[in-house]
Each structure stands twice: as structure tokens, then as C-alpha cells.
Image 1 (tube, helix red, strand yellow):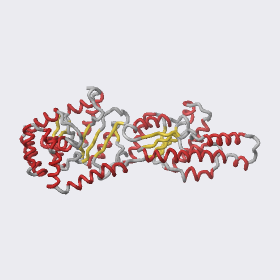
Image 2 (cartoon, helix red, strand yellow; image 1 turned 135 degrees about the horizontal axis):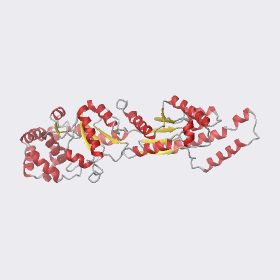
Image 3 (cartoon, one colour; image 1 turned 45 degrees about the vertical axis):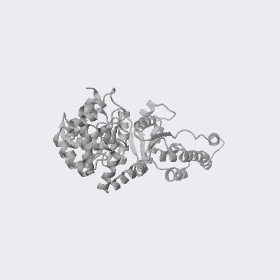
Length: 435
């Protein structure tokens, strides 16, 4: 058994103690999908968990490096947990209360009848037979474009030999389809599973005639898939600030690599000049103007920094309208290395410009301030700044973070910083699950 199998086994042992769940497949299939040679891209670990245990599940999986970026609402039926420390690990695809498209199953009865096989709780034969025929074959046979594999057919045949499962299926089928259920039972006994998929649309119509309320359920499901799910996705601006050598670029890259596999994510470095030649020429000219020794007096010293700060502000506002705003609405997560507040660490800057930096500019949804001992930063990256100047710059950033409610993180350990960053991002959507 490899390390990944050991990890999955440990997770399930903890689940058995704290969380009520059902794993819909066999344990052998579970360990087949985690093996590198057998696992497919679409393979995941499916679980059904009651809504009352979702918080426990989130905290348990977080201890093993799994988080969710989905916002868990009262109507949420499906949550995806991914491992941000090891993106190659299989994801946990969790259905809340019941399987998707399985309103015909009594949730309380399903959890009370679950059985424990080889240390994992699975469905009892009655509900497993009902799920495999109605969900996998009847619903997915044509609509999902999936083929019913020989493995599933043999499993259905074995379950059909169980008299309790067969009687339960026949009784529930009569409640769902009425008289049409007799034909389905005959086709199952003959082994004509392809015919069941072909007649799916006619039986769906018969079920709607018998249960008209299903129409509203279908319309609600279509609305959720096409409209609500698209516009309820998070579109967050995540900003990292700090002095040079504090580890911003390293953490931004690690966060980007973790998020891009599960959400639409993009990163922007805000230290470069906007690609406009006129701005570059004017800014270079203003810098040379500041360096001239002919300017003297306190008034002139204040006036001569205005062209530089105006062009800095102009540059950042160009980035706001050309990069930040379009990309924030296009992607789920927009990561920025540096921000407009870098202007404030200049030795001299025109303070009335605070109106444009603090009040009119777009505020980050999540703000991280990476800091450390100035002497360690200086030893890590001996830039043109001294330790005293680094301390001054960090104090300026610290005031800014306190003003906008950011998260100061000391960068002693890159792994520890990365874990804390991912916890804060997950907590933004679900604060009760990641305290």
C-alpha cells in the first residue's frame, strides 16, 4: 500500500469517528483510483454527508490539506474539496444529504441502513440497487452520454439476486413510474440494460405525469446550473504587499499554482510600468527633474515631487482599468504582487495623493502583508535599502494593513505562510468552517 493509500485510509478512520457519511462504491475501487497507473483525470472520491456534519467534515479535511473554495449556502447540494498541498491527490466530491438527482431516496432511511465493510461505510444493497439503476443508468444513460460498463452490469445482476433489494426496488419503482415499472423489471431480469436507456425519455414523461411537482424541480435544477452557479462564483482580488525580499513572489506563485487547478485564477505583477511609451518618457523626465540640485527650499522640494507622484498614480489607474477590473470579473481569483500603496514607501511623496491611493482606488477583498525581521530580509536580499529603511517601510505597510483590515503574516517558514494564506482564502467564503 503506497503513501497515498495510507493517507486516504487515515482520513476514513477519522471520518468513522466524527462524521456520518456514505461512500457509494467499493473499497477496492477507492484504492484503484488513487494508484497513479489506474487513476483517471475525472476520478474523485464521492461521499454523501448530512448537512449537520459539513462543518466537521471541512475541519477534518483541512487537517489533511483539503479545503473548499465553494461558498456553502443553505441550498448548496454539492461541495468539492481539493488538496492544495498535493494537487495530484484525488478530490473529495461531497453531496449534501443525498446524491444529485436522487429525490426518490429517503435520506434518513439511507443513512440509518448504511453498512460498514472493511472499515468504510457504504450503502446497503437496497439503496445501492436503486441508485445504480435510476441514477447511473436511467438518468445518465442518454443525457450524460455515458455507457453502462460491464462492471456495473455484473454488480446490478449480483444485487438483483438479493430478495430484499429486489422487493424494495420494485415497490419504489411503482411509486415513481406507476405501471411502467413492470416493463423495467422485466428488462432487468432479461439483462436488456441498453433498452432501459433507450426508453428513458418515455419513462421520464410518465414520471412527470404521475408527479407534476418534478417539473419545478427540473426547472430549478436548470436555473441553478445555468444562471445561479455562474453568477454566484467568487470574484476576489487578493493582494500581497511587503518589502523586497519578504517572499511575496514565492507565495504568489505557490497560491496561484494551488488555485488555478480548481478555479479560474490569474496573477498580475504591479511593479512594472504600463506599456505606454508616453508615460515612460514623462516619468523618466520627472525623475531627472527631481535629481537636479538647482531646486532648493522647502516649497520647491515639495513641488518637485508632484510630477513623479502624479505619473505614479496615473500608471496605477491605467492598470486598474486595463487589467484589474476586466480580469477580476473574468476570473474567480485575481492575485497581485504589490499594489498602489508602494507609492507611500517613497522617501518623499505628496500626501494629498492619499485621496487617490486610499479612497478612490479599488480595495482588495483579501490583503496579505508579508513581513519579517529587517536584518533577516537584508541578509536574504541585500538591496539598496538598509535594515533601518526596511523597518520604516514595513511600519508604513503595517499601518496600511491595520487601516484596511489585512492579514500580517511573518515569513519565517514558506510552507507555514502558504498554509495560512490558503486557510484565509477558504475562510473568506466559509468563515464558520475554517476558524
